[in-house]
Image (tube, helix red, strand yellow):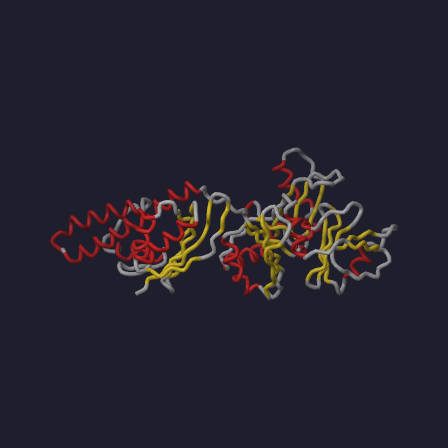
Length: 407
């Protein structure tokens, strides 16, 4: 069964980070915890590899708007909307990112354009944190949009000295608990009737205009995770959208193509050595180098034999660095027979750590036995093998291997 990893992040690097793992379609937590700050985010890298990552951001950095824009073309409406609010925005339109949503459920107004606004810099900062930790993120949602909707009431949740409020289906805000009373008083100053607030965690409020209704308490991030699944909105759209992963069939073809390129590179390296040893066959060998180089790199229009060795070294460095006796290519040559012995086991991704001279593979198979057979084949090739966690996802078993040479 597929599992989800929910991560809630704050605005600053020093803010704590909460995380939670649940199974698809289940309501109970599998594991949860809190990291001290952004510097510890890499502790979730392994947990994220076999799970769908869903990020919940601090809503204090996001503003939601719903307006009426003349016109029928959705594209024209989206283009005009930012400039209709230009005078109300604290920053220039060019410095802000606008993420649009369809009309939310339970919205009773006549507005036809719904969007969230946040700074490009803040969104890019968040994405850089995950990139540095090698965590792939496809969806982001502000925390207040993950709160439940209670008819004729605000909903509230306290977490890390902050109070998250969802005031409407497309409206919410986040305040520090130290100034919550002041903020509530300002928001409700002109409201005649008391404001009903359904709270999912203990909140102390003395403001007379607020009437608290205590709801069943839950782990804060678990409550937000449940609400996340009810959301179709995603901040990562437009220039920040993440393309879907390629199909397994295409991945296999790309893997074969990659091996072919590696083989051509090995062939090229061997021919350069031959060129140094057999000066009498210079012209014949140099022509072979040019032909093979163009096969490996079709976009190359001109091959300079005087610099081809440097070009190959550069290409190999891009792949993690290698020589004829060590590195990525040598490791692939040792690993390839194991794949031949266990055809049911298919590669999903490959990474090479040049500093540790370690090859990291993510693979899939039809059964657990294939993983054991593959490990045995690698060990017979004088390789040191560490196996990662293996997960059964329906008819497919996923897992990982860290492979190093014994020498």
